[in-house]
Length: 211
Image (cartoon, rainbow, N blue to C red; front, side, top):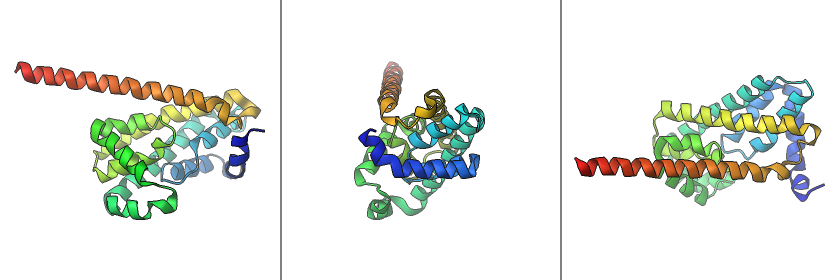
């Protein structure tokens, strides 16, 4: 048994029990917490739900939608938290929910550079996806765009994790064996976005110069 699994085992046991007892509402609620700065990884919630799909307990579309709508609700709550309490409050009390200053500064920098669209791409990144809604709220991102990008990014991420759980079946707990591949895919997505964004800015600057 891997060291990673030993460390995560209490959390894995909790997630398994919670989802097994409550079903789809359990997925929905845990994914709300995952997007509301509570450190319950979707990398545990969704693969286990995928495993339950593989044994016939759940239906795949319902699993993905339960997780995605949970992400959306949790992200909206975090978005409004950013609007209501502001940056100073988060920096002062964020430590109580394992939220560090560097988390906020990094996600703020991403939001300032890339705007509303970062809500989509950061939903595809482990760890960062949990925190991106906060600077979007602090920066008063367009709510409609924020919600749409959050939903779409979460839909892709949750579909990937559910599929992994289905494919792994009873071995879904071996998170450490597939996490590196998810990280690589996520890095490629972000790299593609950065290239697209830079190209777009250059085209815009070129048009302004010609005018």
